[in-house]
Length: 360
Image (tube, rainbow, N blue to C red):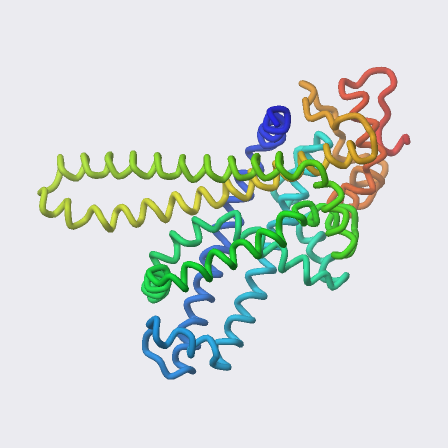
């Protein structure tokens, strides 16, 4: 378990600048756009249902309206596409890191777009639902905190959690989603990297997880819990700093009136940063486990994530155009270059046996 944690830190640090830059840009582009669509869709569905606001009493009837069902389907499809694209991009990022490749932001995005396109062509729609469920479980607490700031959903959530039946329904839903998500944690890699369909990818994931369930759950659960604890510590620190600053430069009564609004803004910013950390950490950990468990299943040596100090990875062949055989597609998917990547891993320091990809 300690070795897996160390290797997860290694794969995160290898290309951390491009990873952080990609996540910030992707979230800043897709996050506001999705919230805008969600807000417009909610207002439209309320208007179509004939309601001016939501309450615990009319929430069930609101969900059964045709306009609401249509809005949920459209918003859900857009959300799944955004999440599937991000999943493909992060798998491309860490797949490259596993082979000592520091992919740039554009290459990460194009690689994810290529993976998403392949899944759409294969009609792997179940993979999209699994991605949605995985993001929902890993960001469950953050989603709850965001909903407490969104009107009128904050009122509906508070009313739902006050009732015993509501709390029981939420717990039952979480348990059912966990039972579906945990066995399929490596389905994303099996489908997007090994090009399997959903059924075969899910079976592959279950085989990889066999004998490692406890370690995997403890590692991922500990990571989520640690990040949430860190989020609270930073939030309390920021609130204390804001309170001291406002008490020094403004009237105390004015400071007490402004502090709740400032606290809300600080929490939303921290939730945004925590969601990026969860996505990067989640797929970094899953990628390390995927490679190690795959090697163990095939009785091969452990995958080596101890990166060499000197990287010799030619991006292009002057006589053949793009690297790894002359076309852009292998550079994005990485799978066709695996023969050279494995050769490069054996000769990372450019010794006499080193050969470029076009020489193999």
